[in-house]
Amino acid sequence: MAAHFALLIDPAAPDDERRDFADTFQAIDPTAPALSVGELSSQRGDGIFESIGVIDAHPQELEAHLERLAHSAALCDLPAPNRDQWRQAVAAAAAQCGTGEHVIKLILSRGVEHGPTPTAWVTASDAADFTAVRVHGVRVVTLDRGIDSTTSARAPWLLLGAKTLSYAVNMAALREAHRRGADDAIFVSSDGIVLEAPTASVIARFGDRFVTPAPGSGILHGTTQVSVFEHLATAGHETAYETIRTAELARADAAWLVSSVRLAAPVVSVDGAALAVDAQFTASLNRYLLTPRD
Amino acid sequence: MAAHFALLIDPAAPDDERRDFADTFQAIDPTAPALSVGELSSQRGDGIFESIGVIDAHPQELEAHLERLAHSAALCDLPAPNRDQWRQAVAAAAAQCGTGEHVIKLILSRGVEHGPTPTAWVTASDAADFTAVRVHGVRVVTLDRGIDSTTSARAPWLLLGAKTLSYAVNMAALREAHRRGADDAIFVSSDGIVLEAPTASVIARFGDRFVTPAPGSGILHGTTQVSVFEHLATAGHETAYETIRTAELARADAAWLVSSVRLAAPVVSVDGAALAVDAQFTASLNRYLLTPRD
Figure 1 (spheres, each protein chain N blue to C red):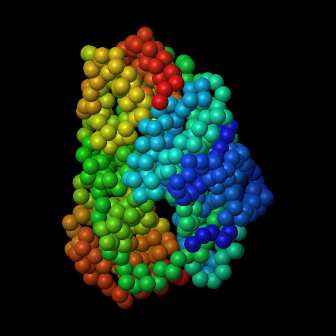
Figure 2: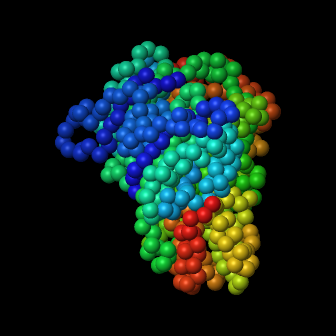
Figure 3: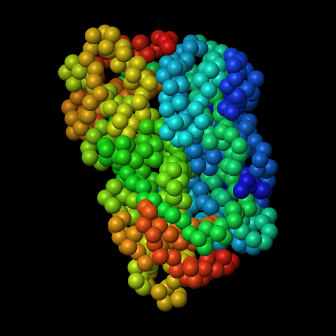
């Protein structure tokens, strides 16, 4: 959905002793021109972002998203985000969201080419209606991500753990999945290990154990995956970060793609092979994820 | 350098029988807001670009750039660019460039999120002064690109042959090179094969032969590399697209990074090992590249 609210924020505002950063925000028309053609976000996909689910005006897992924004900034040699400032910008955007589901996006760009400072903005949009996909699930295809599972540790300049604005490949993978008659993709490494979906984390259940790939393997650490694991552990389930081989995925007892806005989508097939869906359990996961929480 | 001229163009303008597309351009202030925060170029690095060198108001190798723009569009499932329209937009931008060296950039974005059409713009800027680097050259480090040399053919969704706006990794590689005390980087595949620089092609001389990696190996086909090869062939030199192993590069008799604006920069060292520079030959290459030509 198109954004209904946007704030430009000045990420270079001095973090002096003050508590109120409202004067570093500027509400703008989200459909009007706001960025110059010199923006490095546009020219180079050079910046980072977060997408936060909002339930009844409450931004979910805000601190985890701010933590990951800071992690992405460090990997990309961008200035450390001023968390008080971003927290207040998110609160201002959340105040513009009514009941129901919304999305708040945080974007920190390297700024205008040869300009003095980064550019940053926050938007709020209605969420699409994902009710059906949370029940009926997604057919996924596995797509080679090119890298092997040791690449991330060896080559930090590939920014594999950063949530950058350079998402052209993620978008191309979704188009390829659609071309193959599927709804979504799961990236796998060239040495046959499950990584992540283009815009979601993968969780699989084998017997009584819930497993997800470790973040060190070159994937983003999913905020929703972490939240689901906490929820599962609280309910007495065993959870683990583990290597999942591509061939094993189709033999999982169940699997989900989890993300901040679509939440838990059960995987109904992998490369055409059907996977069982535990409708009741999936519904309980989504009830949890739809509960406002920090 | 910051752009001194910019045109927004309407890439969805119907390609009817007409010859004049001037009414599909809109000159804008390149430093003023022009793009909305909904732009997918900014949010996702989702689009493609070209950077064209301009010598004394003449855009160099324009047709090769338009050809590559069309190739990138096809790989990214973007509508085929209307070449007459882009050609005229480039002419309008070139008319704003005086004598000396300039850069014209073409950008085709997927457009505004959920919007009806792509967005496109053209900018013109002064070129930076690359006189010194064309003489004194660049110290390069080799950096693992993660992929192996068979990846591109196997996984077209990785967009390895497309010049997309998702350049965060290319920019991170340059920062890593600077951190290591070098000026530039050369990406190599995980199986030890020379690919390309983050914003340039690699040409190496071994004895009497000039070689460059084949485009099928997951790199962009460099317009300047093609032009240099034509020039070399005309002068009676042997040229070839060949696999260059990383270890061989340091044993080359000479090497250059070639690109549309910086032109031919001799490589003076690879990972700290000195490479010979043929100053006279390099100067002749740059004289050629500085000559207005189609």
